[in-house]
Length: 523
Image 1 (tube, rainbow, N blue to C red):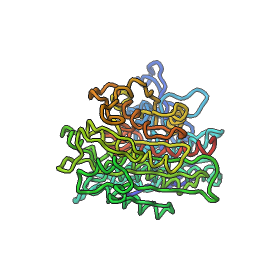
Image 2 (image 1 turned 135 degrees about the vertical axis):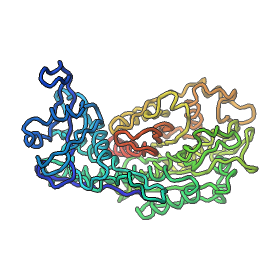
Image 3 (image 1 turned 60 degrees about the vertical axis):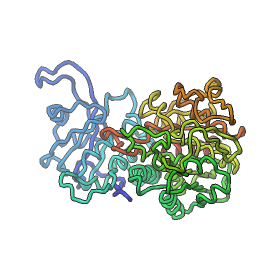
Image 4 (image 1 turned 45 degrees about the vertical axis):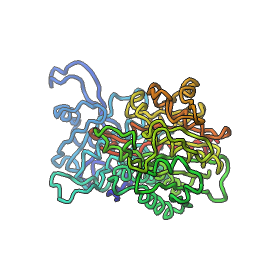
């Protein structure tokens, strides 16, 4: 199921004269004493890019917006009918927060503002963004942020409703971004990249939002394989027979309780000439629905477990963007897919599973299934050969407890974890490095196997860290790696905000692409 997409292009005409349905401008908040004339506390400051609009309103635009309740707070959108003052019938003022001292707004501020404005203007066919873009070395990052925010803010899952929804306005069809020069090669390249990146994020959201009865492991594998082949990637799909023959005990164990058998999908990108430098492996958890298995979850909120394949969705979509962007390093992805169901054939607490790398794992909790499938995929990636391994998964509720729903937890090689944090900060997908303490590993000793999946006393202390410690057992010593736990950030259950809509977010597609760029640039 493909959701309708917003198109984006550049324009260098005067925003006040554009034939569009709405123009978006930025406003900054500014505190101050109460104005004796208007009675309004504080004033608004127009951001750069809105000069011609302000001139058309004879300098009274900020006053009018303040009367309508505008504060300039981040993400706030106030609409104003222009009554013929400019060509567009509507101006939408989006808050950017306080004016930065001597600098343009941060890229993430612009990204969220563009997303909020485009989302608020649903129902408009054509919208222009006249947001502040610096004219220095920060300009490309700012333009990329505005383009990404606009394209993601216009996202809406196609859904399954059978009746027309009269109150449901269609997303903005076309966005124009005002820039100084549409012929500028750097600007053109940034927009092209933003399209490729946001296409990947939107596809991730579509997959995560799809009903789980429509995206069971075989169907998910087929969808990924079809998209990957069309993009020019090499594809290998292992079915249940091939998994059993290959010794993928973890994937088989988790998937054996479902009538929809498991899969392992491998996607490979090789740059022209074979590429140079380091080899990158990506691994993503693809549990298409997680009941918890025999260790069944509570019913409340279980419907959100359709998002437990968010890591695999992000990695698969990242590979499609890689195929479009063509970095100069080889990238290979491994997507273990299974449905964790309770049945007479389910794996059980107490089972001992032989993994792909030969290690024996004692199962204590069938709801710790993600690490079982990931361990096999990580071991396969290391066996195939890689220099960097980035794995992402909706692995633990402990991530949400520790870091909330916007910040991913990162564990692994310290230097690589720091690179993940830096990449996340650069694209607006924050992540925070966490330790892998020896005492956590000690608590996972098994009396009968090499390691147990979770703390042998079923103690949830350091729950997020237990996941990272377990996965470390399957990473080769010569591979630099990071585990990115996105249990919170991958799915947004609240109201839409910024460029996030309700449902799948697409995290961490943009981080993974930034990391690949980092490997290209720095090895």
